[in-house]
Length: 310
Ligand SMILES: [Zn+2]
Picture 1: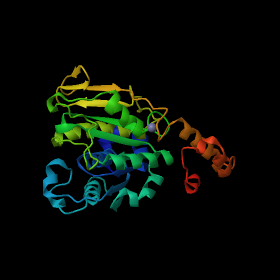
Picture 2 (picture 1 turned 180 degrees about the vertical axis):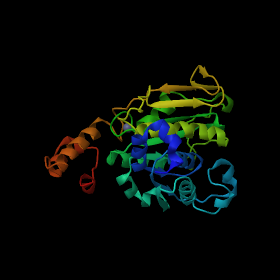
Picture 3 (picture 1 turned 180 degrees about the horizontal axis):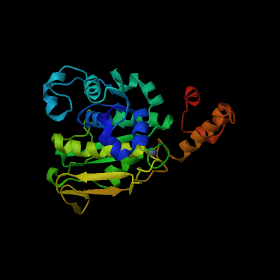
Picture 4 (picture 1 turned 45 degrees about the vertical axis):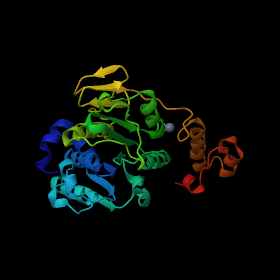
Protein backbone atom coordinates (compact mmCIF):
# COMPACT_ATOMS: atom_id res chain seq x y z
CA UNK A 1 0.00 0.00 0.00
CA UNK A 2 1.51 3.33 -1.08
CA UNK A 3 1.97 6.50 1.03
CA UNK A 4 -1.34 7.64 -0.46
CA UNK A 5 -2.86 6.04 2.64
CA UNK A 6 -0.60 7.46 5.37
CA UNK A 7 -3.29 9.71 6.84
CA UNK A 8 -6.08 7.13 6.76
CA UNK A 9 -3.68 4.60 8.27
CA UNK A 10 -2.92 6.98 11.15
CA UNK A 11 -6.66 7.04 11.96
CA UNK A 12 -7.56 3.37 11.56
CA UNK A 13 -4.18 1.63 12.12
CA UNK A 14 -2.45 -0.48 9.47
CA UNK A 15 -4.23 -3.68 10.45
CA UNK A 16 -7.67 -2.10 10.05
CA UNK A 17 -6.66 -0.43 6.78
CA UNK A 18 -5.62 -3.85 5.44
CA UNK A 19 -8.93 -5.22 6.64
CA UNK A 20 -10.86 -2.50 4.75
CA UNK A 21 -8.82 -3.19 1.61
CA UNK A 22 -10.11 -6.78 1.73
CA UNK A 23 -13.75 -5.76 2.21
CA UNK A 24 -16.27 -5.72 -0.62
CA UNK A 25 -19.22 -3.34 -0.66
CA UNK A 26 -22.17 -3.59 -3.04
CA UNK A 27 -23.96 -0.39 -4.06
CA UNK A 28 -27.30 -0.54 -5.86
CA UNK A 29 -28.16 2.91 -7.23
CA UNK A 30 -25.25 5.29 -7.86
CA UNK A 31 -27.19 8.55 -7.64
CA UNK A 32 -26.27 11.55 -5.49
CA UNK A 33 -26.27 9.50 -2.26
CA UNK A 34 -25.03 6.09 -3.45
CA UNK A 35 -22.32 7.63 -5.67
CA UNK A 36 -21.00 9.75 -2.81
CA UNK A 37 -20.98 6.77 -0.41
CA UNK A 38 -19.14 4.50 -2.89
CA UNK A 39 -16.46 7.10 -3.65
CA UNK A 40 -16.06 8.03 0.03
CA UNK A 41 -15.68 4.36 1.06
CA UNK A 42 -12.97 3.99 -1.59
CA UNK A 43 -11.24 7.11 -0.24
CA UNK A 44 -11.37 5.53 3.24
CA UNK A 45 -9.60 2.36 2.11
CA UNK A 46 -12.37 -0.08 1.09
CA UNK A 47 -10.82 -2.11 -1.72
CA UNK A 48 -13.62 -3.96 -3.54
CA UNK A 49 -16.93 -2.86 -4.99
CA UNK A 50 -19.88 -4.15 -6.99
CA UNK A 51 -21.82 -1.21 -8.47
CA UNK A 52 -25.24 -1.58 -10.09
CA UNK A 53 -27.19 1.14 -11.92
CA UNK A 54 -29.38 1.24 -15.03
CA UNK A 55 -29.29 5.02 -15.48
CA UNK A 56 -26.97 7.45 -17.28
CA UNK A 57 -25.66 10.79 -16.01
CA UNK A 58 -27.42 13.74 -17.62
CA UNK A 59 -26.27 17.37 -17.61
CA UNK A 60 -28.95 18.16 -15.03
CA UNK A 61 -27.44 15.62 -12.61
CA UNK A 62 -23.97 17.10 -12.23
CA UNK A 63 -24.91 19.68 -9.58
CA UNK A 64 -25.95 16.78 -7.36
CA UNK A 65 -23.53 13.98 -8.24
CA UNK A 66 -19.88 13.00 -7.74
CA UNK A 67 -19.77 12.59 -11.52
CA UNK A 68 -19.21 15.76 -13.54
CA UNK A 69 -19.66 17.07 -17.09
CA UNK A 70 -17.01 14.61 -18.35
CA UNK A 71 -19.37 11.77 -17.38
CA UNK A 72 -22.54 13.00 -19.10
CA UNK A 73 -23.99 10.15 -21.17
CA UNK A 74 -22.11 7.50 -19.16
CA UNK A 75 -23.80 4.90 -17.00
CA UNK A 76 -23.76 6.09 -13.37
CA UNK A 77 -22.10 2.91 -12.05
CA UNK A 78 -19.40 3.14 -14.77
CA UNK A 79 -18.83 6.84 -13.97
CA UNK A 80 -18.43 6.20 -10.22
CA UNK A 81 -16.11 3.25 -10.97
CA UNK A 82 -13.94 5.65 -13.02
CA UNK A 83 -13.85 8.12 -10.11
CA UNK A 84 -12.96 5.34 -7.64
CA UNK A 85 -10.09 4.08 -9.82
CA UNK A 86 -8.73 7.63 -10.03
CA UNK A 87 -8.58 7.80 -6.22
CA UNK A 88 -7.51 4.26 -5.49
CA UNK A 89 -5.63 2.41 -8.28
CA UNK A 90 -5.75 -0.82 -6.27
CA UNK A 91 -9.54 -0.87 -5.96
CA UNK A 92 -11.33 -3.68 -7.78
CA UNK A 93 -14.67 -2.49 -9.14
CA UNK A 94 -17.27 -4.79 -10.69
CA UNK A 95 -19.65 -2.62 -12.77
CA UNK A 96 -23.12 -3.93 -13.66
CA UNK A 97 -25.07 -1.70 -16.04
CA UNK A 98 -28.74 -2.58 -15.62
CA UNK A 99 -31.31 -3.50 -12.98
CA UNK A 100 -30.47 -5.40 -9.81
CA UNK A 101 -33.12 -7.96 -10.80
CA UNK A 102 -30.61 -9.18 -13.42
CA UNK A 103 -27.64 -9.22 -11.03
CA UNK A 104 -28.75 -10.76 -7.72
CA UNK A 105 -25.56 -12.85 -7.71
CA UNK A 106 -23.55 -9.78 -6.65
CA UNK A 107 -25.07 -10.23 -3.17
CA UNK A 108 -23.25 -13.56 -2.76
CA UNK A 109 -19.76 -12.28 -1.94
CA UNK A 110 -20.13 -8.79 -0.46
CA UNK A 111 -19.74 -7.72 3.17
CA UNK A 112 -22.48 -5.08 3.22
CA UNK A 113 -24.96 -3.63 0.72
CA UNK A 114 -25.68 0.07 0.20
CA UNK A 115 -29.24 0.51 -1.07
CA UNK A 116 -29.18 3.77 -3.03
CA UNK A 117 -32.41 3.35 -4.99
CA UNK A 118 -35.51 5.55 -4.52
CA UNK A 119 -38.17 3.07 -5.56
CA UNK A 120 -39.84 1.55 -2.47
CA UNK A 121 -40.90 -1.63 -4.29
CA UNK A 122 -37.31 -2.27 -5.37
CA UNK A 123 -36.17 -1.65 -1.76
CA UNK A 124 -38.68 -4.26 -0.56
CA UNK A 125 -37.39 -6.79 -3.11
CA UNK A 126 -33.80 -6.07 -2.02
CA UNK A 127 -34.84 -6.43 1.65
CA UNK A 128 -36.19 -9.94 1.00
CA UNK A 129 -33.04 -11.00 -0.86
CA UNK A 130 -30.84 -9.65 1.97
CA UNK A 131 -32.79 -11.65 4.57
CA UNK A 132 -32.49 -14.75 2.43
CA UNK A 133 -28.73 -14.26 2.01
CA UNK A 134 -28.13 -13.06 5.63
CA UNK A 135 -26.67 -9.80 4.33
CA UNK A 136 -26.61 -6.47 6.20
CA UNK A 137 -27.83 -3.45 4.23
CA UNK A 138 -27.56 0.30 4.68
CA UNK A 139 -30.55 2.48 3.78
CA UNK A 140 -30.50 6.29 3.80
CA UNK A 141 -33.35 8.66 3.02
CA UNK A 142 -33.22 12.39 2.30
CA UNK A 143 -36.39 14.32 3.10
CA UNK A 144 -38.27 16.85 0.98
CA UNK A 145 -35.98 19.73 -0.10
CA UNK A 146 -33.08 18.21 1.81
CA UNK A 147 -34.50 19.40 5.14
CA UNK A 148 -33.10 16.33 6.81
CA UNK A 149 -32.66 12.63 6.39
CA UNK A 150 -32.17 9.32 8.12
CA UNK A 151 -30.06 6.19 8.05
CA UNK A 152 -30.38 2.63 9.26
CA UNK A 153 -28.31 -0.53 8.87
CA UNK A 154 -30.69 -3.48 8.61
CA UNK A 155 -29.20 -6.72 9.95
CA UNK A 156 -30.92 -9.95 8.96
CA UNK A 157 -33.21 -11.26 11.75
CA UNK A 158 -31.50 -8.95 14.26
CA UNK A 159 -33.80 -5.97 14.77
CA UNK A 160 -36.25 -4.76 12.11
CA UNK A 161 -36.12 -5.71 8.44
CA UNK A 162 -36.59 -2.84 5.98
CA UNK A 163 -40.34 -3.57 5.78
CA UNK A 164 -40.74 -3.29 9.60
CA UNK A 165 -38.48 -0.25 9.68
CA UNK A 166 -40.23 1.75 6.95
CA UNK A 167 -43.64 0.90 8.41
CA UNK A 168 -42.54 2.25 11.80
CA UNK A 169 -40.80 5.37 10.49
CA UNK A 170 -43.89 6.31 8.51
CA UNK A 171 -46.54 5.65 11.12
CA UNK A 172 -44.85 5.16 14.48
CA UNK A 173 -42.30 7.93 14.61
CA UNK A 174 -44.53 10.31 12.63
CA UNK A 175 -41.94 12.23 10.72
CA UNK A 176 -43.69 15.39 9.63
CA UNK A 177 -42.44 18.58 8.06
CA UNK A 178 -44.08 21.89 8.93
CA UNK A 179 -43.12 23.75 5.80
CA UNK A 180 -44.67 21.25 3.44
CA UNK A 181 -48.04 20.92 5.16
CA UNK A 182 -49.32 17.38 5.39
CA UNK A 183 -46.76 15.85 3.06
CA UNK A 184 -45.06 13.19 5.15
CA UNK A 185 -41.78 11.45 4.61
CA UNK A 186 -43.58 8.20 3.92
CA UNK A 187 -45.74 9.57 1.11
CA UNK A 188 -45.17 7.39 -1.91
CA UNK A 189 -45.76 8.69 -5.41
CA UNK A 190 -47.30 6.84 -8.34
CA UNK A 191 -43.85 5.84 -9.55
CA UNK A 192 -43.19 4.20 -6.17
CA UNK A 193 -40.64 6.83 -5.14
CA UNK A 194 -40.79 9.34 -2.31
CA UNK A 195 -42.63 12.48 -3.45
CA UNK A 196 -39.90 14.94 -2.68
CA UNK A 197 -38.16 17.99 -4.06
CA UNK A 198 -34.48 17.07 -4.11
CA UNK A 199 -32.18 18.87 -1.72
CA UNK A 200 -28.91 20.62 -2.45
CA UNK A 201 -25.74 18.56 -2.78
CA UNK A 202 -24.53 19.70 0.66
CA UNK A 203 -27.76 18.53 2.30
CA UNK A 204 -27.63 15.14 0.58
CA UNK A 205 -23.93 14.57 1.27
CA UNK A 206 -24.33 15.36 4.97
CA UNK A 207 -26.63 12.32 5.26
CA UNK A 208 -24.41 10.28 2.91
CA UNK A 209 -21.32 11.24 4.94
CA UNK A 210 -22.90 9.93 8.13
CA UNK A 211 -23.99 6.83 6.20
CA UNK A 212 -20.40 6.25 5.01
CA UNK A 213 -19.03 6.65 8.53
CA UNK A 214 -21.54 4.14 9.95
CA UNK A 215 -20.77 1.63 7.17
CA UNK A 216 -17.03 1.90 7.92
CA UNK A 217 -17.81 1.34 11.59
CA UNK A 218 -19.82 -1.77 10.71
CA UNK A 219 -17.04 -3.09 8.46
CA UNK A 220 -14.62 -2.68 11.39
CA UNK A 221 -16.89 -4.44 13.89
CA UNK A 222 -14.78 -6.42 16.32
CA UNK A 223 -11.75 -4.11 16.02
CA UNK A 224 -10.57 -1.57 18.61
CA UNK A 225 -11.91 1.37 16.57
CA UNK A 226 -15.46 -0.06 16.37
CA UNK A 227 -17.99 1.99 18.29
CA UNK A 228 -21.40 0.73 19.46
CA UNK A 229 -24.09 3.20 18.29
CA UNK A 230 -26.83 4.41 20.66
CA UNK A 231 -29.68 3.03 18.50
CA UNK A 232 -30.27 1.58 15.04
CA UNK A 233 -31.56 4.74 13.34
CA UNK A 234 -30.18 8.27 13.15
CA UNK A 235 -32.35 11.18 12.03
CA UNK A 236 -30.44 14.28 10.95
CA UNK A 237 -31.84 17.78 10.39
CA UNK A 238 -30.55 20.40 7.99
CA UNK A 239 -33.24 22.94 8.91
CA UNK A 240 -35.44 23.37 11.98
CA UNK A 241 -37.65 20.28 11.81
CA UNK A 242 -40.38 18.45 13.75
CA UNK A 243 -38.81 15.02 13.62
CA UNK A 244 -41.09 13.47 16.20
CA UNK A 245 -44.48 15.19 16.33
CA UNK A 246 -44.47 18.11 18.76
CA UNK A 247 -40.71 17.98 19.26
CA UNK A 248 -38.84 20.55 17.20
CA UNK A 249 -35.20 19.85 16.44
CA UNK A 250 -32.63 22.59 15.83
CA UNK A 251 -31.02 22.96 12.40
CA UNK A 252 -27.96 20.71 12.01
CA UNK A 253 -28.84 18.42 14.89
CA UNK A 254 -29.53 14.72 15.09
CA UNK A 255 -31.43 12.22 17.20
CA UNK A 256 -31.07 8.45 17.53
CA UNK A 257 -34.17 6.28 17.66
CA UNK A 258 -34.44 2.51 18.04
CA UNK A 259 -36.96 1.08 15.60
CA UNK A 260 -38.18 -2.32 16.77
CA UNK A 261 -38.86 -5.41 14.71
CA UNK A 262 -42.55 -6.11 14.11
CA UNK A 263 -43.13 -9.72 15.27
CA UNK A 264 -46.07 -9.91 12.84
CA UNK A 265 -44.08 -8.56 9.88
CA UNK A 266 -45.03 -10.48 6.74
CA UNK A 267 -41.41 -10.43 5.61
CA UNK A 268 -39.37 -11.21 8.74
CA UNK A 269 -42.05 -12.10 11.36
CA UNK A 270 -41.79 -14.90 13.93
CA UNK A 271 -43.33 -17.61 11.79
CA UNK A 272 -40.98 -16.93 8.89
CA UNK A 273 -38.02 -16.69 11.24
CA UNK A 274 -38.85 -20.13 12.64
CA UNK A 275 -39.19 -21.44 9.11
CA UNK A 276 -35.77 -20.06 8.24
CA UNK A 277 -34.10 -21.60 11.26
CA UNK A 278 -35.58 -24.96 10.31
CA UNK A 279 -34.25 -24.48 6.79
CA UNK A 280 -30.78 -23.83 8.21
CA UNK A 281 -30.99 -27.16 10.04
CA UNK A 282 -32.21 -28.75 6.86
CA UNK A 283 -29.05 -27.52 5.12
CA UNK A 284 -27.06 -29.42 7.73
CA UNK A 285 -29.01 -32.58 6.93
CA UNK A 286 -31.48 -32.32 9.83
CA UNK A 287 -35.03 -31.76 8.62
CA UNK A 288 -36.21 -32.45 5.09
CA UNK A 289 -38.30 -30.05 3.03
CA UNK A 290 -41.10 -32.63 3.16
CA UNK A 291 -41.03 -32.46 6.96
CA UNK A 292 -41.17 -28.67 6.75
CA UNK A 293 -44.04 -28.74 4.27
CA UNK A 294 -45.92 -31.02 6.66
CA UNK A 295 -45.42 -28.59 9.55
CA UNK A 296 -47.79 -25.67 10.11
CA UNK A 297 -44.97 -23.24 9.35
CA UNK A 298 -45.71 -23.61 5.66
CA UNK A 299 -49.34 -22.52 5.92
CA UNK A 300 -48.79 -18.91 4.95
CA UNK A 301 -45.34 -18.83 3.46
CA UNK A 302 -43.88 -20.35 0.37
CA UNK A 303 -40.22 -21.24 0.51
CA UNK A 304 -38.86 -22.32 -2.83
CA UNK A 305 -36.73 -25.41 -2.84
CA UNK A 306 -33.74 -23.76 -4.54
CA UNK A 307 -33.59 -21.16 -1.79
CA UNK A 308 -32.95 -23.91 0.73
CA UNK A 309 -29.97 -25.06 -1.30
CA UNK A 310 -28.14 -21.70 -1.25
ZN1 LIG B 1 -39.80 -7.16 9.03
